[in-house]
Every structure is written in C-alpha cells, then in structure tokens.
Image (cartoon, rainbow over all chains, first blue to last red; front, top):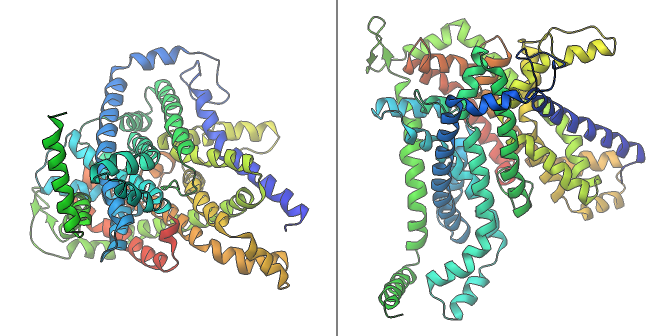
Length: 265
Length: 298
C-alpha cells in the first residue's frame, strides 16, 4: 500500500540504522588486533600479540571464572523460580495474577541504580557480607523474568488438551509432566536459560553494588577503562565477550521465534 | 522393578493429594518465586525507602537511626541536586524520543515491507547488539568520538571540519540513544507485525489514503509497542551511571548515588533518598504506561 518512493526511503533508512548499530561493534573488533597500545584511528598495524597477553592475564582469568560461576548459579535459580511462576500464571487463575507478572518485571523495569542501591543497603543493614552469593541474588532477581516470559509465552500457546489426553491415557501427574509438559516447554526453557546466562555475564550496573571487592569480568573491564590501563587486553576481552555472547543469543533465537525483548513466542 | 514400586505409590499419593485440593498447586508453584522476590527484592526496596529517612553523623561518619527529613530537605534546597535530577530526566526523555524516531520507520520496514528472509536477518541484526557487551559498546563510542578517533578521521577524509564532542552532553545523548535503540525497535516491530492486513484493507475501502491509514489505524495499534519500548529506554537511561562516567563529564543521578554508596562520600541514607527520585518518576511512568496496555507488549 506504500508508494514506491516510500518503500525506497524506508529501505535506505533501515540500511542506515543497521550501519549505525554495527559499525561500533565492528570497530571494537578491529581494535582487538591493534599492534600499538595507543588507541587511535586508524590502528597502527595488525597483530595478535594482545590475545596472548590477555590469555595470560591472571586477573582477567579470575574475573571470567567468577562471572561464569555467577551466571550458572543465577541461571539455575532463575530457571526454577521463573518456570514455577510461569506455570502458576499461565495455567491457573487467581486473585492478583497480574500483580505477580508485574512484580517479576519490576527489577528490569526500575532503573538499575535503584535496584543496586536497594540491594546494597539491604546487605549493609542486614549485616550480610559481600560474597559470590550477594552477586547471585542480584542477578537471579532480574534473570527470573527472562525465563518467566519465555515459559509463559510457550504455555499460553499450547493447549491444556495435551495434558488432559495424557491423564486420560493413564499417566500420573509426574509422568505427564515428564513426558508431555517438559518436552513442550523445553526449547522455551533453554532459550530463557541462554538469555539469562548472557544477561548475567554482561551485567555491571547492579553488580558493582553487590560485589564488594570482587571482580566479575565486566567489573574488571570497567576498572581498566576508568583508569585507562591495560587497554589492549581490554579490547581483546571485549572481542572475546562479543564473540561468546553471540552464540547463546543466536541459538535462543533459533529455538523460539518471537519479537518481544524478553519473551520468545 | 520392585524397588520402583513404593516410589511410584508415593508419587501417586502425592498426585492424588494435589488433585483433591486444586488450590494447592498454584500455591506451591507460586510460593518459591514470590518468597524470593518479596524477601530479597521488595524487602530491599523497603530498606532503601526507610533508610532514606536516616542520617549520617557528620563527625564520626556513623549511621544515625533517627527519623528525619534532612536528606530530602538537602535534595530540594540544594540547587546542584536539582540540576542533576533535571539533567537526568531531560536526557532520558530526549533519548526516548530519539530512539522512537529512529525505530519507527525501521520497525515498519522490518514488519511490513521486508520479505521473510530479510526480516529474520534484520531481527538478528537488532537482537545481537541488544545482548552484546554493554561496556564494549560504550567503549567503542569512546574510541569513535575521541579527538584522534574514527569520527574525526572520517570527517577529515571527506573534507569536513573535525568536531570535538568527546565527553560532552551531545556525546552522552548519542551513546545513550545507541545503546538502548534495540530495546525500542523490538517492541515496536512486534506491535506492527501483529496488525492484521484486513484492518488496512478495511481502512482503504473506507476511503482512507496511505498517510491517513498510517496515522489513524497503524500508529494507534502500534502505541503499546512504542510505550513498552519507551519504558526500557527511559528507565535504562535514568538508572545508568556508567555511560556518564565513561562518555560524559557531567553528573547524573546515578553518579551521585554511586559516590554516596561506594565512593568517598559514603552516605548511604542520602543515596537512598536520591534514589527515590528515579523510583518515583518510574512509578508514575509505569502507572501511565499500564493504561495503554504496554505491559502485554514487553
């Protein structure tokens, strides 16, 4: 229904936006191969020497390991809590159902610094020392909604007649769950888990408030960016993180197809 | 086989117990997530709110648990904090508007003009930057906008005068708009995609021209998507203190809070009081957004 000129203009606009989104990402990847440690453009020359340096950087390794532990734990907690909540909301109607969804979205709908300072004062006044678990508490809280939204969307699309058929055929509650419900839900859960993992691995705004003196990978990157030190290694680490997060996001996207930010249909 | 039996029996008894009490299932399902969110998140917000009314002894730096409105008094009467709050909110609004303007034509092309394969490709091209390293994307812009960076190099190559916008509010506006753009595109795309073609045909049959159809049919139906996207862009900008730290030179609400919690100032109650500003702004925003049905579009 659009005129030809409109379509053409919209196409050009789309191309420009794609370039806007991707040029900075491409550029940071180029900088990872910069032979100089001065970060100007164009880069002085091509080199992979910083990859070795970054690989041997013990601080970066420790930070990566902590980030992976946190991401695994947060994702695990989010899977249990998010899918339980999804079942309740999608399969039962009860008073305050909308409030439950709202409560779960709240940690990502509220400004990050608010959640951060809230958790910081909670831990401080509760005399809870900062540890791996204080980071996990923060991360799991906003990862729950990612799993929840994926699971709810899938449950809403599948009819309850499948479970009824299973029960009619003599399966008990557990068997129905194990052989009917779980397979239907599995890709949505995997997708939710992958996105939670990616979210946790990258989070820094809330994490700074809940980490104490510990370094997650983003905190290590931020510290160096602030002080302007070890920038060549930082470039390599960012390149590595970009490459690694691409994989779960693409898998999650293939498993489910949807347009929501938090929900794959 | 024999060993499996008692387990099976127990399982069945459990199943029967749940079946006899249908209300039990949602309760058991909801208990863990609600307990987590209440004990760890709502309680934390509660502590935040309460501690905003406490204070810090000026000499010892110790917490004073006496109720007072002193923090809020400082917030209102100290012009610095007012300026910072206004700067943050105006920036959040500007970024939201900018992203909406960039995203609308893009999402429209993606949802209603692009053939299916191109659409999937565009979808991934938007989704990846959304999840890609947040710090990496900010740092990329620091490199681009630097005096010796890629922007000035390109401007120089095409014979234009170079610009010196590193560490300015303009730089922050560009970078904020950049990092949150995918959060605006995706909900608008979803909203456009859900509009049935028959609505547009009906509009045309009733004599509406293209522009009228867009304005009176498509845009109102896309509104929940736009509002959903704006919740993200607005809230993310309000709550970000790292972008101003790395890209700008002026304080945002988040920077003041950060310094009072983790920096030298060390005044948690004041940080809590200042955090109520973005909290209240977002509460109002969410309450308004809820009316447009934006929550279904998140």
